[in-house]
Length: 416
Length: 80
Image (cartoon, each protein chain N blue to C red):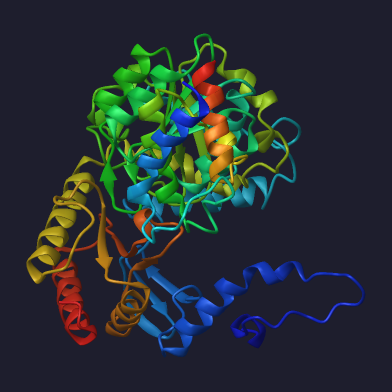
C-alpha cells in the first residue's frame, strides 16, 4: 500500500489559483490515520489470499472462519454451480463485450431471466450487471419530475443514489415507522405519481420491515411499491422469495429488486414484476442500456444457483438454527445486539465507539474470525457495528467456536 | 398564518434540537451554527411537517441552509 493514504492534510502546492480537489477528504484521511496509529489491522484493506470454502479462507496469512460475507446459502462452491459456470466459460467465452440491448444478450441471459421468473412466479424479469445498478436504474427511470418517492431513511446507498439520479421529489420517513410513512403519503398533492421504496431486511441491523402493514397502506394511498429483497432471497419465506412472501404480500408489490451477490453467490442484479408494461424498461433504463452485460459464466452460475435455491428448504432451516444460536449466545455473553430476537441471517453487534469496534474487529481476526466492521455514514444513528452474517454451511460446532472467540476477544477489549 | 406566527411555532419546535442553546436568528445555519447531522435534520423536519401538515422534500431541504429560509419556505407552503 502507498504511504500516501496514511498522510492527513498535506494539500499539494498548486500553481496559480488552483485548489486541490482532494482536500475535502482530509477529515476522513485523518480519521483513518488515527485508527491505524492505535495499532489495529486495517479493517478496510483485508486480503483473502485463499478461499477454502463458503465459510473459510486464509486472510492476512491466517486460517479464518468467515462470518462477514453475504454468502447466506453457501452456493459459491456448489459443484453444479461451478460446473455450469465452467461450461459456459468454455462455450461462450469470457465476456459479452456489449450492452444487453445490442450484442450482449446470450442464451444464458435469457435462461437466467427464465429462472428468476420461475423462482418468483412473476411475469417479467430483467437482469442488470449489479444489484446497485438495478436500484439505480429502476428508481431513477420510473420516478420522474413531479413524482414522489417515499422511502425509509435507512435505505441502502443504491436506493438513495437512484433517487439522486432521477428528478422526483424525495420524501424519507423514520425507519420502519408505519405512521410516519402513512402521514407523508397522505400529504402528497393529488394527482402526483407515488413510489414507495422499502427493503425486506435492512442489512445494517438485520431487522425486517413490517411489510404487511406498509404495503397495504401504500396501496390504499394509490402508490406503487418497490421492495428490495437483497438480504432475504433464498432464505426468508417458504420458497425463499423474501419478506414479501413471508408477509403474504407478493401480489400487492409492483417491483422486487434483488441481487446475485448474496444468496445466489455470484454478481449481478435483477428486477421482477407483473406490470404489463415492464418490458419497456429495457429501452428506457440507462444503467441497463449503457453498460456491458454480465459474462456468460456469471449468468450460468446464477441460473443454476437460483434453481437450486428453490429446493433449499433444509439449508434454510439450518441457517435459521445458526442465526438463533448465535443471537442467543451473544446475548448471553452480554453483547448488545441490533435486534431483540433474530430476524434474519444478520446479527449486528453494537460497539461503544469506532476505536473499541476496530479493536474488537482486530482481536477477532487474530482469533481467526472475520466479521464486517460497519461505521458511519453507512450505519443508522452513527453506530459502529460488528456485523455477523451467517451461512447455511456454518456447522453447529463452528457456531460454538465463534461464540468462544467472541467471548475471549470481548473480554480482552473490555466490551463484556 | 403569518410569518411571525410560523416563526414562533418553528422556534419552539427547534428548542429541543438546539442542544448548545445557540442564539437563533434568520442568518443561523443548520449545518454550521446548529451542527445538525442528517438524523437530526430528519427528526426536526418531521416535527415541522407534522405541525403544519406539509411535506418538505429533500429537494426542497437542499435549498434551505438558514433558519430564515426555513421560516420563509414554511410560510409559503402554509399559504398555498
